[in-house]
Length: 245
Image (cartoon, rainbow, N blue to C red):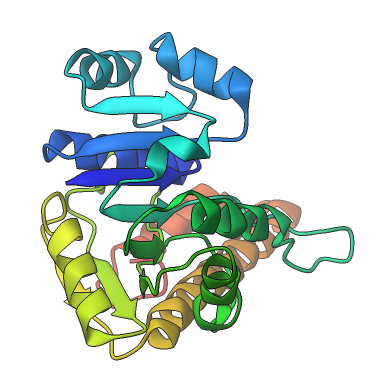
């Protein structure tokens, strides 16, 4: 399958390498020409992807890094994995995502499956990404969502053994996306809608954020009391159904 991955950051590059290892032809697009030059030189910029991984993908002829959207015109599937940072007001900045959607719509020359992995609020695929792409394209594309699940530096869970959730704006889109991810992920589960899949990601992020904040505050309190917080956490962890198990 010919695949385009838009964004070659920690999510996009990880997906690119997973797809290459499954035998797909991947065009990796990133607006940063400096980043693209480094990748073309076989230099990785993220944990979990080595220089040798990139050099192997390039050497097999299955991976083409570029900043040129015109090179994705005939792909079968597009994965959107661009960043959605917070702006000065603490709100999601969707500018990069909007720009990517417009460029995708202008570049595609046939009906294509488009999968969003970028983190954003539920409804973004249906109410923002699809309209922007369709306004720049003469085709009615297929749309699905599979929220990114990449944990840089985690030696236990990677692309292959981290379960995936996929939702779509149609059953056809969802099923085609599931078929793609199952080529390099062991477990891929369907969601009833794109919004359910995206909301699950928001819940995951919120749960993790709250727990990290809780442990940080707890550690401060333990330090002030002269109690070794690392020992406390280790002791609590032996409880199989405890909060830090």
